[in-house]
Length: 77
Length: 394
Image 1 (spheres, each protein chain N blue to C red):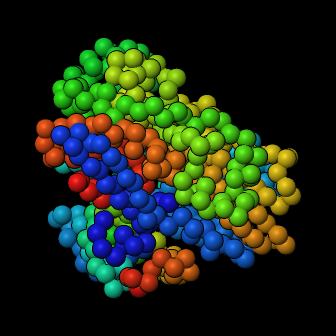
Image 2: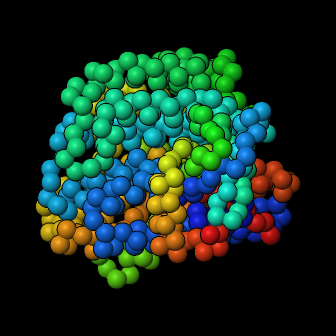
C-alpha cells in the first residue's frame, strides 16, 4: 500500500541528479530530481527509484522500526 | 525496484501465457504487505496519526486524511466544514502530483523518451507551500486542528500558480479551456498542435491503432454505504476481503477513469475507442485539469461518506477518493487505544486476480513479444498499481 523506504544518502552524483542511499545493508541508486538540496547524510523516503522527500533521522528511525514491527524488513536490516 | 526494498514495498507478479501471439491466460500475484496496519493495535490515536503518513508516504495525504476521518468518527467528533475542505484540497493536490508523475515521468519512459522531472518536482514544492498556507502549524490531520482562517483566500494565488504549472507542463493552454474542448476531434487537433509528454502519448496510441487496447467489462465501483464495509471488515475472515475484494462475487474498478466517466472528453473518447487505453489516458488528464477548479469550488467529493450513526460505538470507517481510487480505513477504538486497524487500498480492487487489469490483458495480441510487453506495460501503468511489478511471459 504505497510504502516508501527511508534511506541514508551515502553518495551524490550531481551531474546525473542521482544519489546512492543505504537501506539497511543494501545500497540503492535513486533519482533526486524531485527533492531540493539533498546532502550527504540526509535521510530520504524512496519509492520506485525516486527520492520523494527528506525526513529527519528520527523520522527515519521511527519508520524503520515500524517496518520491523510489521515483519517487513528482516531481509534488509 | 530491485533487491532489498522490494521486500518491504512488495510487488505484483504478473504472469501471462501466450498462444499464437495472443494472451490466453493472466495470473496476478501480489506480495504487497497488506497487514501492516496491525502494528497500530494497542497504540494511541496520536501515535497512529503521527506515524501512518511516514509509513504510507507515497499517498500519505490520502492515508492521513482517511485515518483522521475514521478516528474522528470512532471518537464521535464532528469534522468542521472548513477542516473538511482544507483536507480535501490537500488530497486533491496529492492526486495532482500522482497524475503529473504518470504523465511527465512514466509516459515518456514508456515510449523510450527522457522523463520531464521538473514539473513533478515543482508540484511537490508547491504542495508544501499550499499545505503551510492552510496549516501553518503543519498538523492538518489531527482531530480538532482547524485550518488557518480564510485559507482559501490566501491560497487563491497558489491555485493560479498551479494553473500556470499545468498549462506549461501538460496542456499548453489553460486547463479549463482544455476541458472545454468537448469533442474527440478537438482533442486530436490539440494533440497534433501541442508538443508535450501528454500529447506525445495520445498521438502514439492513435498512430499505433491502440485506442481500444485493453477494453474491459469490469464495472465501476458503486457508492457503498459504510455498513457494507463494516460487514466485510469486522469479520474474522476480513483479511481475505482486503486481499481480494469483490461485491457479491463480482470484481469492480475504482480509479481516476471510473471517477471521470461522465466528463465530456472521457465520454467522447469512450465513444470512439471504448474503455481502452486512449480513454484511460484522457481520463487521467481530465481529472488533472479539473483539480484547480476543485480547489476554488471547495469541492466535497473527496470524502464520499464521513459519518454514519449506524456504525457501532468506537468504530470509524472513512472512504477517501485517493489518487488511484477509493481508499477505505476502518478503526476500532477501545479505552482510547486502537483495538483494530484495517486499510483497503484501490490497488486490491483493480489488480484483483480477476479484476480490471486481468480482463484488460486477456486477448491482447501482438506479432512480437516485445510489442506485447509494451502494450502490457502501458495498460498496467494506466490502471496504475502503487508498487513495482514483474512481468513474466510464458
